[in-house]
Length: 349
Image (tube, one colour):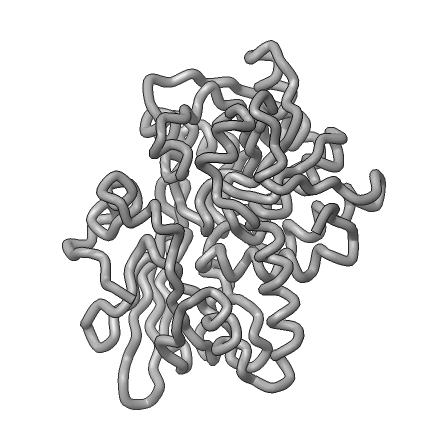
């Protein structure tokens, strides 16, 4: 795929929501924003990661905040260019390419809209290979790339640039500002060279999203979508059942909670902080962060986000391997089960 046009958005949104593991924002909202931008500007150029020159200036952009808030408080169109402009003004240089910070329903498509509105090409990559809830959870960050200086903007026209001592402080200060901005904001961060992006970003994300979306569309009539998706991602189906109960609250700028599923004889419990982090079958952990825990509607095959999870839905849960760099000691310290408060080691899949 060398460019992204209107006809590509549905498949990318579906695939991004699968890789978003329940988080990353509502794919429908991301698709609406990208469609509005592409209707004005035409297709966005997509640059394969391997073709980035060493001296390229790459700028990831993303929405920050609780997905439950973003469903009701849509980003304003100017937010995207405001965040990019604010960071460019601070850095004193212009980006040559934009990028996705993570793979997720909104956060794989907001960069498409930002690329359209700024006229910049987008790279076919992201910084996580999935979605994670906090800013420091970024593969290039494992290798010393700094999240700050970081720019933020909101729907009211406010802009802020923060410069922090490390990526954890970027998360703390940006999260507090996001809460004051109404629970969601638009960000530009992790500015890096083309050489750094080639070495540290996760390649092929948007192409994979489009492929997964097409896979869902192809298999939805036969009812074997979950098996097809799990096979493409090198994973497996964990559980199929009905959602019995959902407990969800917005705390500190995150959507936190649990969902209980049953197939009539066994119970699966999913725990999430924006994204699904832990799956327990009758009390026994069977899948954990950082591997991908994805929920698909049993009938349509479409991914179900944590904010859209409802009592009575019939779903299939699958698990798939994450980027292997997340399973290094440094990676697990950032995104392993213990970081999120679960006293257990990652479960092998």
